[in-house]
Length: 109
Image (tube, rainbow, N blue to C red):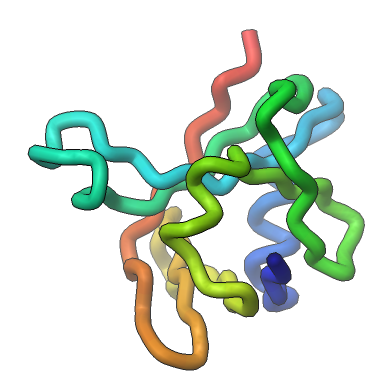
């Protein structure tokens, strides 16, 4: 899986991660969505990878991961951007938009 980060998205992620080491996990959140195939994408800042996480190629300096069981919900090539003036992200692929209000949550203690 590959995610292209725009310059604005990379800058925003680095701001949110700050000086404390961390990675970004792409998630497919199904909590409260009815069933396992209905969900919304999200981003989490994490301390370390879980055993089921796999590395997502970004070509940038920000480490990205995803749980191997959630890869099925996303296409192989996507682009992450920031919406101007907002704190949310936009995730798109060649074939679809995954969302324009994707939140980044810092889960580090």
